[in-house]
Length: 148
Image 1 (spheres, rainbow, N blue to C red):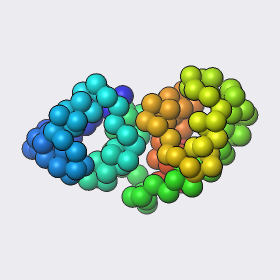
Image 2: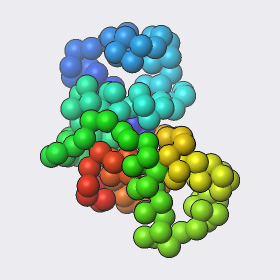
Image 3: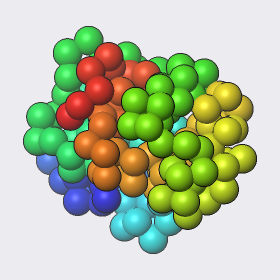
Image 4: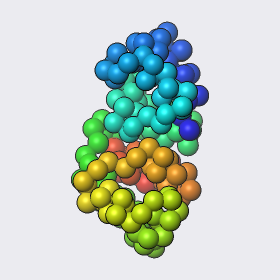
């Protein structure tokens, strides 16, 4: 999902895992687990790292080789992300039930994302973007172009 790109960026910038752990304010072992994808890194940490390295989430996820987009917004607005997810779902004529089934979750989880109560999880964001070829940065409100 993202481990190769994270490691590549870290090494090319002469950084150690402990350096990135410090940036994220987490333990070095936690960062090691995230970089190796032993555990999936939460979106909030991925956004900190893409901003630090000045790259897009789409690049980190391997959806594009273009490192960054013009006019990218650094912060994620949870309400905007929820609206974008709902717009995406309607554009693709997906019910919450259908998308929930695709993600192996339940409708109430999607409803909470769409209402801006919680930020979409990394595996769900990745799965949606990979399957439907939609930009992760777009869905999180970081850019206005929906395709990567």
